[in-house]
Image 1 (tube, rainbow, N blue to C red):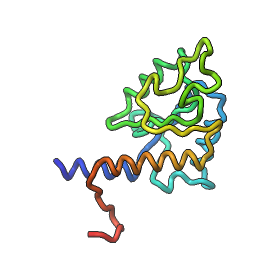
Image 2: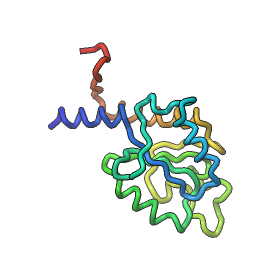
Image 3: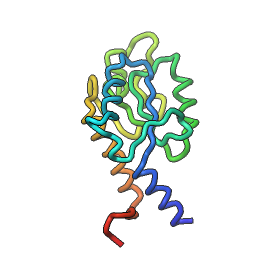
Image 4: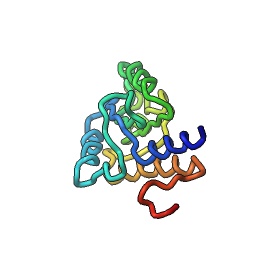
Length: 157
């Protein structure tokens, strides 16, 4: 059982699948998230793939402040994700509510609704910052596991 768990953990760290969800943003961060996935910045070189369903995703990438209307949907998407699951808050609005904090229909940042694993501030967050934040999250997960499994072609036996 221990070996199977290590292999599954290795696969999740080396090839995480993400789902992107806009919780009420102005779309500036959304454009930067999509730009990070294009060949110019190539987030896929780290094995990261964008998925269309939360049931296949390991990481929930959120942009924008959490509105009262979107809160139940955001919770439902998070609950549909398999364990272990992680949340990345992209942009100032997602981290703290940003300029929308205090508005009548805005709850706050993502961390008021879901447990956030990584914060990527900026208005908007640049593709380089998004890549840096996601890779640091993956490295922290790898360090958290304690024992690292070497993948095929790593040269170590």
